[in-house]
Image (cartoon, rainbow, N blue to C red; front, side):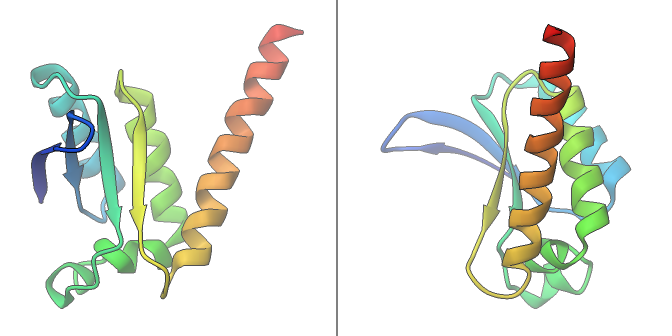
Length: 116
C-alpha cells in the first residue's frame, strides 16, 4: 500500500508505504527510487486500522522488531533519499524506537570504522 503526497507546509514530496514483508518493501523502495523524485520515503508504523494490522503492517509492524529492522535496512540500502518511520504513541512504539536507534547506531559505528 502506498500513498504519494506533498506536505503543504514544507513542500516535501514523499511516498508513505505500509507493508510487512522486508523483500516486498525493499522492492517497492527500489521502484520508487527508480521512477520518482522524492525527498524521502516514509514507512507507516503508526496506522491502527485493522485491515493493515491484520496483515502485520502499520502499527503491528512496530511489534515485529526483526521484520522492521530488515525493512528499514533494506530500504535504506536501495534508496537515494532518507527513510523515515511514522509512529504513534501506543502499542509497539518502544520497539520502533529501539529498532531505529539500533540501526542508526550501527551506521554510526560503520562510519567511524571507515574513518579509521
